[in-house]
Length: 95
Image (cartoon, rainbow, N blue to C red; front, side, top):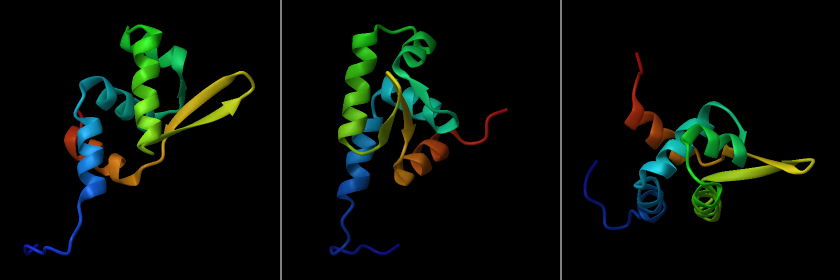
């Protein structure tokens, strides 16, 4: 790729910033394989519910994940294809 001042990488840079936190990276990596509710996420990560909720809120606000209501529960999944590609490239093939 040549240098091109007309190219904008604003969205990609924003995603990289958000995924730069280990907890958010773990959340997105986990949600790439299955939809989960908040309780399952905080139990798996062994973090306080409030902490997980704050990270989920940021990921939602940046349009990386989306929640879908099922009764009283909300199940989250990854909606950003860019984020999927970045996380997949970071994780690579796992043994």
